Length: 508
Image (cartoon, rainbow, N blue to C red; front, side, top):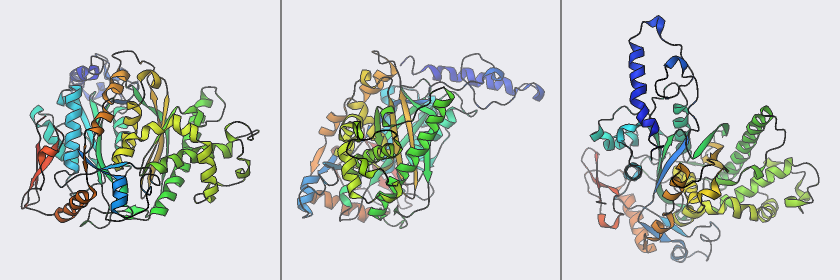
């Protein structure tokens, strides 16, 4: 914690230097710089270096205290055995009652992160929320979270909500890093919060739901460093998943189109990422192609787990089409028949899917499978899905396993916005290091999931009907037992006659 708190202790020194500079005559003010460091006692005129190794210092994950079993849901919905558990790759699905909304999820995960790290509330200078769960067309979730900072008197916190389907959390993370690497940074930490409740009407899509939130503390000298200049982004206008009906929680979804859009965006982002990393390498005197071998781990936004396995196979297909030499040997053995295909012609090609799923299986088991633990047992968390995968990866590997590795990450939000980027993991895995602390903080993930209450499909359906009944209703207190929530969980206590929401916290 000593190292973690270092930038906070520098805040007052930075502010003092800035205040003193503001008293100087205009002609004596230092020239503007693209960024500045918070090194103590360094005048602004000389602070022309980037904050070092900006990235994720700490994480917190929250998910609801109840779930429905997907095998039981298959029987309840009278579908063939394995449709959800094998076809989608889902085992359990977490869900929220009327007692929880996106505000309460985010209140809980932020409070828990701040309490666990024991950071002072005035050490946060930016807080941004990524969500697509909109309960107010004007008032941001961020403004509700400011309630947590009230006692500290810290109102000087930049950031607001960011929305585009499941991509808002990644956009918020990028914005936090950009703020920290800019002249706007005041030396304090940034908080990135991703939270959503994924619900669907009764039918084929409902088993792909879920709920949860992730909070990330962003700062310099991080154990998970966002690699600068290595983001491949693709955006376009498409209606694969959208929510035009503000009277309903439910989206309109074109499932087949959405999967094609996801895979097309993956192809584009991976290609852009490859171009940028190869350019960096050439500038460093390294002249070779980038492949999946350069990523020790790969995590994906996870609408359902089966799509992620297909996505890693897709990246292998990308590498295969660019590979030179004899592809009859090594990992591409037996795939030569697919050599002349084009990416854009293969989104529904089952032969390609089958062949590369088989060829990439060992790679999937080593690089990606462990990241799907939370998604398998909790479902899709929309904006927090990718970062739940990151937490799952941390929970299943030691600091020594992760040290020095590169983690590739693909973020996708329908409509659409997508990015492929990477984290570089710190080399220092020693006891007490920031990396060791981060990994340890995720180690209870399996135990927490196992402590949830299993709810029958009948009760689950009743609760989903209650969510429909109370959606956008006013002047009510939500039904349910607050003692069914995890200790320390914030919950919706009442919505008054003016739609104002009041929250309370279950004692820890």
